[in-house]
Image (tube, rainbow, N blue to C red):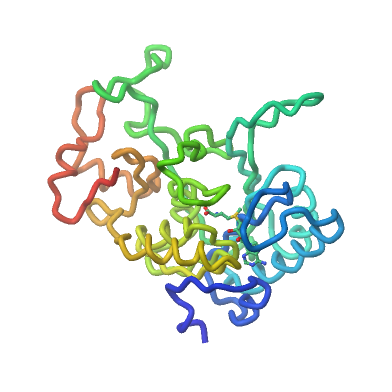
Length: 306
Ligand SMILES: C[S@@+](CC[C@H](N)C(=O)[O-])C[C@H]1O[C@@H](n2cnc3c(N)ncnc32)[C@H](O)[C@@H]1O
């Protein structure tokens, strides 16, 4: 039964715990495994020999595909080098949709091209039945005055009032670098990165599973967007941190019945189909048809987070 695992974070090895999850039972799986880059995790080795790392990854990847529903999606985050092996394996088990390039500048490596993105592989279990929604992200605006940064060749009035459709290159979500914003974890992801994947492929009450939960980013995103989560991590300290954070997380990323992703008190992702409903209530004509965040703040149910 999957019910007993819903909205829980379990401590243990994901290969053991995934065995407990029935076939075709979750709507989305997301994995952010150790990258085999000698990071200092407290409970696991991050420096396996090449063949062992790939063989281990293939095991949990096939489990992720097995537990995903026919309508569901599978996401894997890693550096491009490992994703090339994952993709070769996943192509045999599921259907490729996108290689999402998440811009994230890194320290100079020397002698080669400067790495400037992580990849997120996006596969669906069944091409025909997959649940996928188009997304929009906001135009770049001046934070205080709200005017648009670019002049768009004098055609500002013809632009979508919120922003363009989200492409497969993400440059608007930044890595967590500041220590006061991160927990004691070497590679915590920003929650609004996961929000985007969840809004794109799931609906309210759908189940999201993360076999490498870390500080619980996926579960927090799922909970605040009104979804269910199942998460695993080998490290009991990370499990405790996540449970503590989840106690204070509410399913309140919703405006006028629409689930949205916030960052720094502004919407960073909305479904294309939901825009029209939001526009009816919250658009002010000037400056250049922007969102009336003051009005949103006055709504009882909405807590615009920090
Ligand atoms: C890259 S981190 C995930 C970070 C996470 N996405 C976040 O935002 O906090 C990988 C995590 O996998 C966990 N881990 C490593 N091997 C594992 C295994 N065999 N089963 C479950 N968790 C494991 C590590 O403890 C670590 O927290």
